[in-house]
Length: 292
Figure 1 (cartoon, helix red, strand yellow):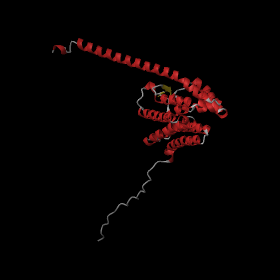
Figure 2 (cartoon, rainbow, N blue to C red):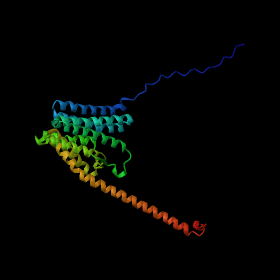
Figure 3 (cartoon, helix red, strand yellow):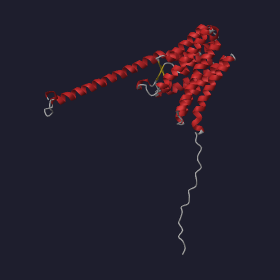
Figure 4 (cartoon, helix red, strand yellow):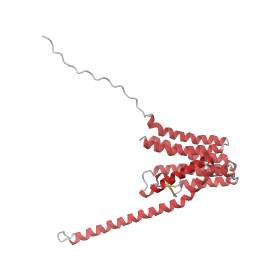
């Protein structure tokens, strides 16, 4: 007799384990963030070499890269906690340490200890501003999403360098005086940690009739940057400063309107509760709880 043979199932081929990691596309935002930090550190090198125009340009490049990394992370769906922490580290290097040291080598070092104190004050204020920004993410009321609390770090860094820009544009010597440069840097540091509401231009919606004129203005600005960059940067910085009264007024108007709507809704809820209580007390089928 032939022995019955058991049919065995063929074994499935063994899968080769895949390499764990991220694709290069997911790492692009982090590459941009690291490049921004490198641009800020390069500004310090140019300041040591007394090449002030290149130092300011390097910080401008860092600001442009800082504006790109977040958008690339959202486009590529590559947002992560690691990227957020790396971005904060890059920001304090590029917009805290770098502009403060550039100003120190340019003018503040002649004040000795006072100049170094102003330098440290600017760096600390930048760090505090970034820490507050990170802690407030997702906690702002709806009316505040189009505003920053205080001057953002990239804008504060570029505004702190305005005396250098004015000196390059108009050859005015008074702005290079350490008292002028130091007072201006301290003022910008205070604005970064202040509660002054400033416009978040990336979230402002442009009405349809103004889109084409806006492109014309942007084109003229870029053309001006190619021909007279320091003059155009001075004008842009001046316009940004003049926008503060309008942002404060607009913010407080929206805040008052939101508070008024909130109070009206609370009054409506109270009136509704009172009406329910009156209906309950006048209903003959319901017992009077006070008489029990």
